[in-house]
Image (cartoon, rainbow, N blue to C red; front, top):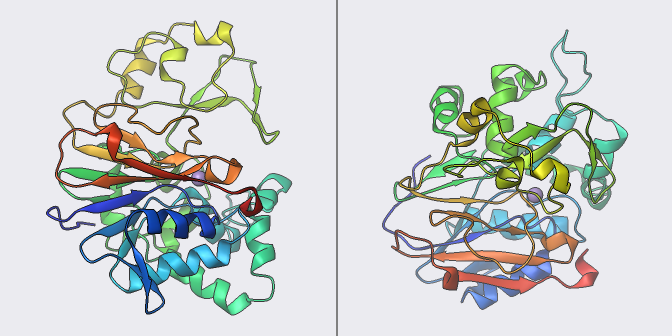
Length: 322
Ligand SMILES: [Mn+2]
C-alpha cells in the first residue's frame, strides 16, 4: 500500500492497550481531541501494529486508533498480535494438525486473555474490530520510508503482494498460514515476527514471561556480523558463551536483508529498553516495552533522509495501565 511521500508523519510503536499513554503521547505531539477524534492540522499518525493484548485499556486503544484511521488522521498496519487474534477464530485447514490457525494452547491463551476478558461483554464490538483487522495493511511504502511490524524483506513482499487485497490479509491466506512452512506461514512470520535464528543444538532460553525458546530474535541490517552477539535483538540478549560463537556464512547471508542505502525503515515488535534512538542510520524500532512499564515511543518524520535521534518523542507508561 502506497502513502503520500510528501506528507509529514508521526510513527507510533506497539500500544498494547495503553490508551492513557497514547492520549498523553498524542497530546505531546500536538494533536487535539476534537469531535471525538485526535487530530493534527498538518500531520498524520502511522501506528506500527500491536494495538491489542496485555494492557489495561485495549478497547479504548482500539477505538482511538480506528477513529483516527476512519477520520483520515492515521494509518495502522497489522501486528503479530492482530494476526494472532484473527487466527484464534479461524479454523485451520484439514491436515494441518491444528484446530485453529492460532492454537488454543495455554501459551497463546495467555497472550490473548486480556483482550478476551476486556471484550467479554462486548462481543459484537470485538467482532467488528476483528473485521477491521482485515483492513489493516501488512506494510506501507512511502518511497523515502517504509513501515512494517517486524521485518522488511523485499523478496518476501514481492511474492506476497499478489496474494494480498490492497496490502491486506485475506481469510484464505490467514488459513494457509496455519502451516508454519507454507508460503503464507513463512511470509507472514517474516513480516510480523522477523527472523528467528535457531540457538545452537540443545540450547534453550527462558523469556521474561517464562516461555522456553530455542530461537532468538535477530537484527537484519548488520552489514558484517561475525558472531551471534552481533545479531541478537531481544531485551535479554544471549548467554556470553553463545554470543561469542561465530556465525556461518549461510547465516550471515540470511541475516543481511536491509542495506544502509535502503529507505528509512520503521518497525515495532522487539521490546527495546533504554533511551529511544535509531538502531541503524536508516532503521528505527519504536517498541520500547510500553506495557512492561517502559515507554510509548513516536518518531516525528519530516523529510530527512537519515534518522535523527532528536526526533524520538516518548511518554513513560503509568503502572495502572499495565
Ligand atoms: Mn508487540
